[in-house]
Amino acid sequence: EIVLTQSPGTLSLSPGERATLSCRASQSVSSSYLAWYQQKPGQAPRLLIYGASSRATGIPDRFSGSGSGTDFTLTISRLEPEDFAVYYCQQYDSSFPLYSFGQGTKLEI
Amino acid sequence: EVQLVQSGAEVKKPGESLKISCKGSGYSFTSYWIGWVRQMPGKGLEWMGIIYPGDSDTRYSPSFQGQVTISADKSISTAYLQWSSLKASDTAMYYCARHPKYSSGFRYFDYWGQGALVTVSS
Image (cartoon, rainbow over all chains, first blue to last red):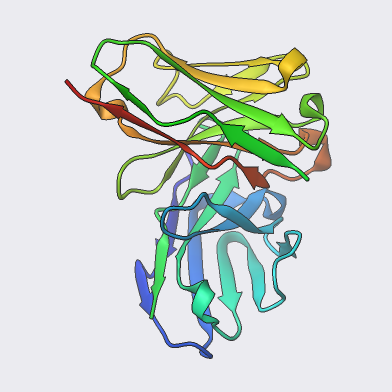
């Protein structure tokens, strides 16, 4: 089973700053199988990045993803007030349980 | 416009059965997988299982295998998640989410339902 560990658990920044969120896998993950989501309170998760670095439809270009193997990063270049939320990474592996999510990083003002 | 609309909040007693639904629209329902994700109060996301409505191919997380049943009725573009005997620990928000065909080469959930809150309490 591949375990995803996100760091930091909480990130405190201000609007306009750059945010760097980390997702580390316990085993190598195919870049095609790594995604990032944003979840705001009371809302469903929203897909931000798939294939480690491809932005989903309608996602602003201040969001970018990078990485390979066991280390992946979500970067928000200049934080907007609406970016303060919880962020999850997700992976797929052909062995069960197939899909898993990281525990989340809370991005707070 | 792609939409996944889930059934409403439920309040049940332990031991009762429940079936919640997720209706897809705005796309070919039989050409995408539908996954189910649990979020317990104040906690993170847990993948439960996934179904391909085109042929009802279903896969479960070992953590949920035998605890829930995932099904789909492609004639009405609806996927289901059901329990035969609820426990208090099943109290959570449950999301359905669309997933592209595996032949796309990617694995992600691009559209999500609004969530269905299930509360199990005596």
